Length: 287
Image 1 (cartoon, rainbow, N blue to C red):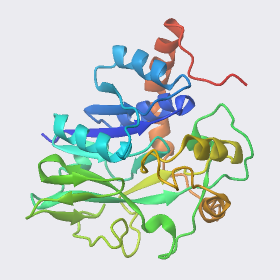
Image 2 (cartoon, helix red, strand yellow):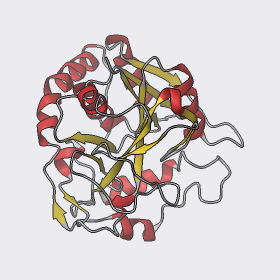
Image 3 (tube, helix red, strand yellow):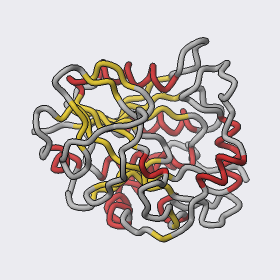
Image 4 (cartoon, rainbow, N blue to C red):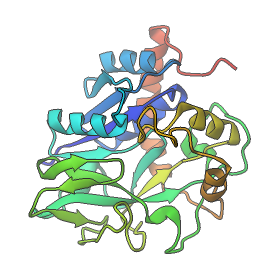
């Protein structure tokens, strides 16, 4: 039996946490290893409350340490303590969409022993013209995404890695031990170029919906939080500027592939929201 964990490092993302957790529980992940990077909103309280009701959530405080990249250190810490055979490394604005399989286990069981990691290509979603936060699922709010073209940012990948193969984990990929290699969503060997891309994107069996900018307001909040893939003193820690917005606010076409998973996760979301309400914990906003 295949087992799978997902690792997340998060800061000030409380409105999105119930959706994210419910989504990955619906996919069937056995462990959710979540690292809070010094949140100052309700994020830690939400995660702490939910971890008490859902044993698959394992929460750790993970503040910035001078000279260290919080994302990389969290990922490698998670890999060392995971009890599962596979581990996905995804962000709070990334939702995995399986198109042909009923759960993550059915998806992963197809991979041969030499598959050290699975490259999941982004499907980059833009703002859909929205200026402000709306209290609704990001998977419903943002429907417009990048055009289907080999040169888009959908060539970027995130990874689901066989834990025993990990030599070192980073933001997009893992350095694999000898004898292992990357495969794509179609269970075919694939080359990773420029350390984080495939030559062309593949979305036939799976895609990673990446709600990278959300609305204009949420993008500005994202920029203010800083980048967990940078050290505390890095000059580009807060470097998501207007050029980033223009190149990532992609709204060329609509994509509905996530809808079946939104439905499957609905009863889990209700259960999680009910638990927060019963314990007086808010996951929303104050405005």
